[in-house]
Image: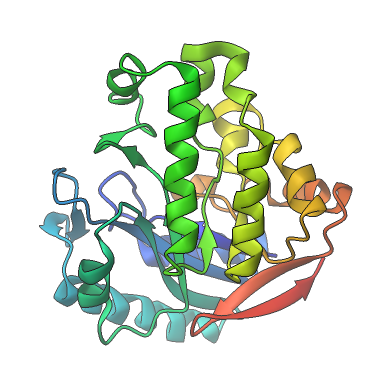
Length: 278
């Protein structure tokens, strides 16, 4: 089993060292993990930080180079114990970050880059502290439309290997808007899935939804549509922000995938997709 969405204490909203995660991975029988710490680049926000030696620093090329050295050290150490360790990042996408992303990743030997929509209009809709500010300004149709437009832009940017938690907009939206949050226009979602396939990126099965709302990201309706539109590349991750959540609900997620006719998941090496039968 593999886990391809992990945040260590380098992310300002997470805890646990690289070595602690590696040790936990061995204890629960994972064969491969990929560290994907947050890389937020929105210049209008104040959360573009990573943590080194307990101290937050602005995300930079030098900082990511240091992180790479740390990941490679545990990679080599735990390879002798039978654990494969990969180096990735999770990028919060916002139009206009392209040049900055290229600059801060120059010289990195990344295995995997996830793209995610965390913010709309520079407000974090994935935060219980901030989301209400955005919800109060938009009805449910506007919210869904704006979110899906952002997803479409992310996919067409061709910057990423996989898209994270594609329907994370429901996380706090359900409590605010009610069941209407599930009324994503089918024609819009169909175009997004078509674009995902055409651009050769993967869609993530993110198990964190089970911890927050007892439902995977993506929801069943979207899983069915993804299959209908021929998506093949699927990645899987716990989106863990502490070692205790590493690997959570991965086995049920595999069963979930199989129930919709998917028979492979993908791992990555030097940003090259490699299929694994499930």
